Length: 137
Picture (cartoon, rainbow, N blue to C red):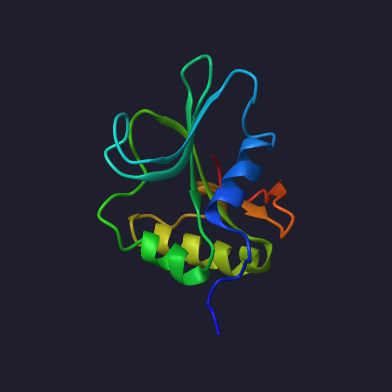
Protein backbone atom coordinates (compact mmCIF):
# COMPACT_ATOMS: atom_id res chain seq x y z
CA UNK A 1 0.00 0.00 0.00
CA UNK A 2 1.27 3.44 -0.89
CA UNK A 3 2.13 5.90 1.86
CA UNK A 4 0.82 8.77 -0.28
CA UNK A 5 -2.32 10.32 1.12
CA UNK A 6 -3.44 11.82 -2.17
CA UNK A 7 -3.98 10.78 -5.75
CA UNK A 8 -3.04 14.27 -6.97
CA UNK A 9 0.29 14.85 -8.67
CA UNK A 10 2.59 17.62 -7.53
CA UNK A 11 1.71 19.50 -10.73
CA UNK A 12 -2.02 19.31 -9.93
CA UNK A 13 -1.35 20.63 -6.42
CA UNK A 14 0.81 23.44 -7.85
CA UNK A 15 -2.06 24.37 -10.17
CA UNK A 16 -4.45 24.42 -7.21
CA UNK A 17 -2.08 26.70 -5.31
CA UNK A 18 -1.74 29.01 -8.31
CA UNK A 19 -5.52 29.26 -8.52
CA UNK A 20 -5.96 29.81 -4.77
CA UNK A 21 -6.15 33.11 -2.89
CA UNK A 22 -2.47 32.75 -1.99
CA UNK A 23 -1.37 34.39 -5.22
CA UNK A 24 -2.57 37.13 -7.54
CA UNK A 25 -2.84 35.31 -10.86
CA UNK A 26 -2.78 38.54 -12.83
CA UNK A 27 0.37 40.06 -11.41
CA UNK A 28 2.41 37.52 -9.41
CA UNK A 29 5.22 35.58 -11.00
CA UNK A 30 4.69 31.94 -10.03
CA UNK A 31 7.53 29.45 -10.48
CA UNK A 32 7.19 25.71 -9.79
CA UNK A 33 10.18 23.55 -8.81
CA UNK A 34 12.63 26.41 -8.44
CA UNK A 35 16.12 25.00 -7.93
CA UNK A 36 18.33 27.94 -8.88
CA UNK A 37 18.57 31.70 -8.56
CA UNK A 38 17.05 33.47 -5.56
CA UNK A 39 16.95 30.52 -3.12
CA UNK A 40 19.93 28.47 -1.92
CA UNK A 41 17.75 25.33 -2.02
CA UNK A 42 14.97 23.81 -4.12
CA UNK A 43 11.41 25.02 -3.58
CA UNK A 44 8.26 23.29 -4.78
CA UNK A 45 6.54 26.57 -5.63
CA UNK A 46 7.34 30.23 -5.20
CA UNK A 47 5.41 33.33 -6.05
CA UNK A 48 6.84 36.81 -6.36
CA UNK A 49 4.40 39.68 -5.95
CA UNK A 50 4.53 42.99 -7.78
CA UNK A 51 6.02 44.54 -4.62
CA UNK A 52 8.78 41.90 -4.52
CA UNK A 53 7.47 39.76 -1.67
CA UNK A 54 8.38 36.09 -2.09
CA UNK A 55 5.99 33.34 -0.99
CA UNK A 56 7.36 29.80 -0.78
CA UNK A 57 5.18 26.70 -0.57
CA UNK A 58 6.55 23.25 0.23
CA UNK A 59 4.16 20.59 -1.05
CA UNK A 60 3.94 17.36 0.92
CA UNK A 61 2.01 14.32 -0.30
CA UNK A 62 2.64 12.10 2.73
CA UNK A 63 3.66 12.31 6.38
CA UNK A 64 6.98 10.65 5.54
CA UNK A 65 7.61 13.42 2.99
CA UNK A 66 6.98 16.06 5.68
CA UNK A 67 9.24 14.32 8.20
CA UNK A 68 12.00 14.01 5.58
CA UNK A 69 11.88 17.76 5.02
CA UNK A 70 13.08 18.29 8.58
CA UNK A 71 16.10 16.06 7.95
CA UNK A 72 17.42 18.29 5.16
CA UNK A 73 20.35 20.63 5.68
CA UNK A 74 18.32 23.75 4.97
CA UNK A 75 15.41 25.20 6.94
CA UNK A 76 13.36 27.12 4.34
CA UNK A 77 14.68 30.32 5.83
CA UNK A 78 16.12 32.20 2.88
CA UNK A 79 16.27 35.89 3.72
CA UNK A 80 14.33 36.83 0.59
CA UNK A 81 11.27 34.71 1.55
CA UNK A 82 8.49 36.80 3.09
CA UNK A 83 5.91 34.03 3.55
CA UNK A 84 6.42 30.28 3.95
CA UNK A 85 3.80 27.52 3.95
CA UNK A 86 3.65 23.77 4.11
CA UNK A 87 0.81 22.28 2.05
CA UNK A 88 -0.43 18.77 2.90
CA UNK A 89 -3.37 16.51 1.97
CA UNK A 90 -6.57 17.14 3.89
CA UNK A 91 -6.31 13.68 5.49
CA UNK A 92 -3.01 14.62 7.15
CA UNK A 93 -3.77 18.01 8.66
CA UNK A 94 -3.89 16.99 12.32
CA UNK A 95 -0.86 14.70 12.09
CA UNK A 96 1.07 17.33 10.12
CA UNK A 97 0.43 19.91 12.85
CA UNK A 98 2.03 17.58 15.40
CA UNK A 99 5.03 16.81 13.18
CA UNK A 100 5.63 20.49 12.45
CA UNK A 101 5.33 21.59 16.09
CA UNK A 102 7.52 18.72 17.30
CA UNK A 103 10.26 19.44 14.77
CA UNK A 104 10.15 23.21 15.16
CA UNK A 105 10.56 22.80 18.93
CA UNK A 106 13.82 20.91 18.33
CA UNK A 107 15.32 24.08 16.85
CA UNK A 108 14.28 26.41 19.68
CA UNK A 109 15.72 26.91 23.14
CA UNK A 110 12.43 28.23 24.53
CA UNK A 111 9.06 26.46 24.31
CA UNK A 112 7.02 27.44 21.28
CA UNK A 113 3.37 27.17 20.32
CA UNK A 114 1.72 26.44 17.00
CA UNK A 115 1.59 30.18 16.28
CA UNK A 116 5.42 30.13 16.14
CA UNK A 117 5.46 27.41 13.47
CA UNK A 118 5.34 27.67 9.68
CA UNK A 119 1.84 28.12 8.32
CA UNK A 120 -0.05 25.08 7.12
CA UNK A 121 -2.31 24.81 4.09
CA UNK A 122 -4.13 21.73 2.90
CA UNK A 123 -5.64 20.51 -0.34
CA UNK A 124 -8.56 18.23 -1.06
CA UNK A 125 -8.75 15.65 -3.83
CA UNK A 126 -10.30 18.24 -6.16
CA UNK A 127 -7.16 20.36 -5.84
CA UNK A 128 -8.77 23.13 -3.81
CA UNK A 129 -6.51 24.85 -1.28
CA UNK A 130 -7.56 25.78 2.27
CA UNK A 131 -5.94 27.62 5.17
CA UNK A 132 -5.80 25.74 8.49
CA UNK A 133 -5.16 28.69 10.80
CA UNK A 134 -2.10 26.80 12.08
CA UNK A 135 1.18 28.66 12.27
CA UNK A 136 2.18 31.94 10.73
CA UNK A 137 3.16 32.56 7.16
